[in-house]
Length: 85
Image 1 (cartoon, rainbow, N blue to C red):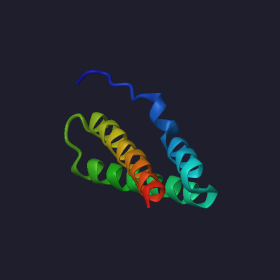
Image 2: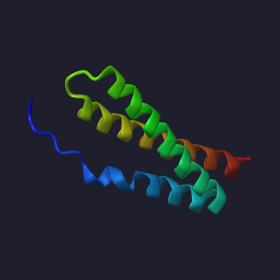
Image 3: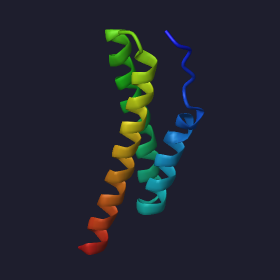
Image 4: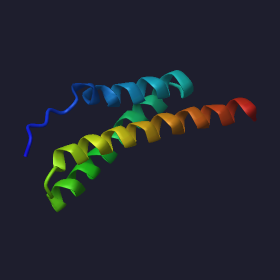
């Protein structure tokens, strides 16, 4: 197996989700979303490690990116709904 170095940028994802939520909906929502992001990523990591196939670290990194995009797009869509209503 090749040596795989995780992207250090992914360590900032909870902060980015929280900051984006704070900008759109307020501090409390941003804080809740950051904690929810951490919980979803931890559950996803546990599921990947429980199945422990070859290349599990790459799968964890991919899932972090997918969950991050899901949260950020969801926030953007929710704010667009608030503005158009």
